[in-house]
Amino acid sequence: MYCKKVCFTLLGFFCVFLGGIFANAADEMMPDNGTKEISKSVRVQLSPTRSAKISSYISGNITKAPFKDGDYVEKGQLVVAFDCRKEKAFIRQLSARIDKFKHRLEATKNLYDLGSASKLEMQTNQAELDEVVAEKQVAEEKVKSCYVKAPFTGRITAQHIQSHHSVREGDPLFEMVADGQQELQMVIPSEWLSDIVVGDQLRVFIDETHKSYLAKVTRIGGKVDPVSQSINLYGLMDFHHEELRMGMSGQVDFSPLLQESEDGPQAMLMDMPIETFGMPYTVQPESL
Image (cartoon, rainbow, N blue to C red; front, side, top):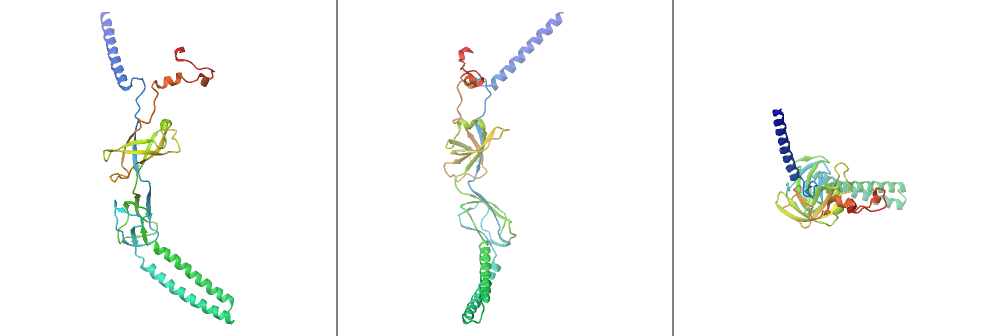
């Protein structure tokens, strides 16, 4: 009997001890208002406002490719050049044929005026001339494709070719991004939407530079993911920063933008009209 009392006493002390440990752990995990602490920071990634993947319009040998990954290029600057000597010679050949058909057409018109040539012959010569002219226009457009120029000012981010390489039509040549203000891409909880509007000021901390930058909200995604209850958010740096590169990442703290009720969700429930639940009056807090 005595042994049983001792065992029950020790068991009681042990339960009280474990209860204290779990209570302290719960207090550390819960803030003073009894709700779980939710982080107000999200990850953000830098992306360019404009980007391009340039492919070859023609097949041929490359004679010039002066820029490499990371190089700065101006809009309209030559980036890739092809060996188009054959195409240019073909244009000269077509020009000679055009001159020949022009002289033939002129002679046919003179004979037609004298009654020695038919109208059909004159129309046939005109059609042959128009055909060669159109063929020359196609060849000239092909020669223009021999010189690939930068579509905008920016930096080369990938180069898939080198000088003296042979490529086919459609093969990738290089990739580039626009030089200017960097765009921010992030994913936020959809419940934050009530406190965030386009134009809100953001402070962005970039991991790679260990610096903070000012930015603004520019766009809000058009669809909420129902599974994760999140939505895409986009921003733009206030100024261009030379040290920033596409793909850098960091954090944005939304604490200054998010509004929270001082009394928590219970106070919001107390002030809610009871007609929401089918009753025509509002319950006062003291009545509960």
